[in-house]
Length: 220
Image (cartoon, rainbow, N blue to C red; front, side, top):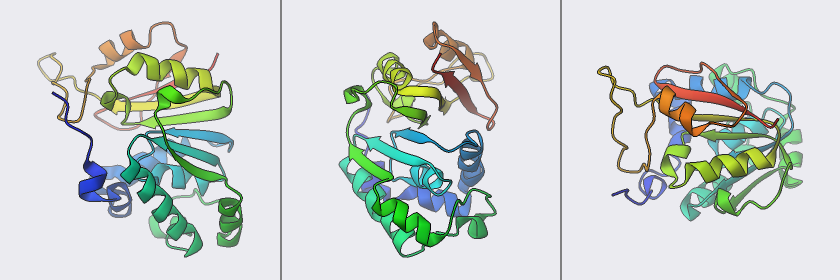
């Protein structure tokens, strides 16, 4: 039975810690996500958690909306991102990490933030009613946690004008079997079974890091 997702209640804004320490190459992984979308636009971060990925895209010039069902995660995302932007904590993130993804000055980032170009909402992706309102979407290590991944794909596909990046752990074992879902997961996939989930969509597999299934899902 899947356990309630309480990682943010227990560990706080742990993705920020992972990023700044490059825990298990997490900094490299998230930087690679940003690098996949070189042209800024309006972006939806599905299952945004504590807001780390939303923040990286925002500091790269994107207008970002993050959504998550966890009220604790949304509170953390709002608090940490505002602190990072308004108090210049990590505002020059490139100098801290070597990542080339900072657009504009700290003052410009604060102005964009005050204008509402980085927002977070406590909501299920299933509740998203709009169509073709985001240029891009990112759904990183989230789809395995949702009960109805087919519906998630449908809503994300409906919401984008260009493409979405979706990642999930590769659960294929050496003997050819698929590892059982973890305690917070409803699903686990191999590349082959994940491809079955994507039947009917226009997509391509992309190589981001070992042990991760990553795809680019196109709007057309």
